[in-house]
Image (cartoon, rainbow, N blue to C red; front, top):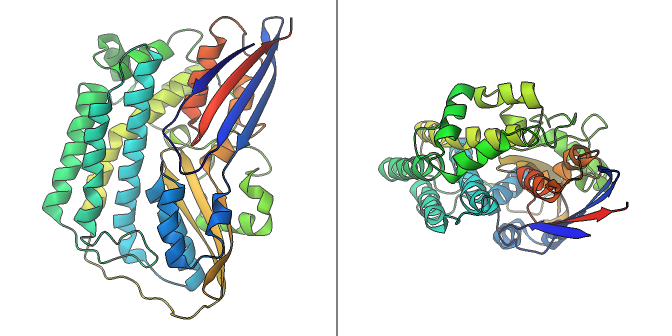
Length: 394
């Protein structure tokens, strides 16, 4: 029996993904994936919306901005508040957080998998640039609340933060301009000027590129209402979500399947390690440009005022995170959260019959299985700590 772990930064509450592989006759014969998630939704129940909003960043340290935005949207939906004047600012905040989460994978986890030193200083610089965006949008730092805050964009400060983020990405992740297509990707990996390029080259090798490929479809960009209807109707949807009655995968590969860096790899190797890694690189490469595009759409806005009384109502919110699509549904009664349900990317990607389980089933059980399985877990990116146990039954 052997084990390996794919560690992640600390979460606000404990949780884990446990993967058990049983092998025999040179193949993986059985895969068991168990997700143990903290009861974060329960912690929000009984709170006023303001209390819930203050608690969310403490519960979700990995993607606190996205979680806060999803809760805010759900509260707005329940109260009938129209916060569209804050849409561009919110997209900017969510994308900035996604950039730092992608960067953690590429600057900290990827070098470690090559036996190289992680790059915490570069990551800290990226995070500092991303952290400067919220006060540049909302001087009072009140943007993460139902109805939004007082939006007063400081365009010079925003431009400086986005430029710093772009420069650090190009230097630390790509060590050059990001590759635009499969030909440039191949050339970039051959030069190998950064840990990301060296890992990508490793993942393009035979036996690596197609590892984990399976037929699980991508999660469509469903609306918040789609998620809300299912969460409201069935509490079990939080733990066992389905799309058209079947599992789905969410995250960079689901969003970037048509990108020139990814399409050829999908055709040649399916949804394996190479396609997953290329999709993350493609998304990170375009995030700085997307931030600038959102910044161009900004206009001053005031907080959207809502009813002061405790009106009952239910609402939902959905936000794209680095790991995939996140959705919240909640019901308000007497001015407090009476019920709250969450479905996070981990529940999709690590379902018992999801992309990880299907991607590992039948894999060759040679000496490299633990490494390849760990890479696949990291590619699907759980938001809690993970462990892999391999049991040979021969």
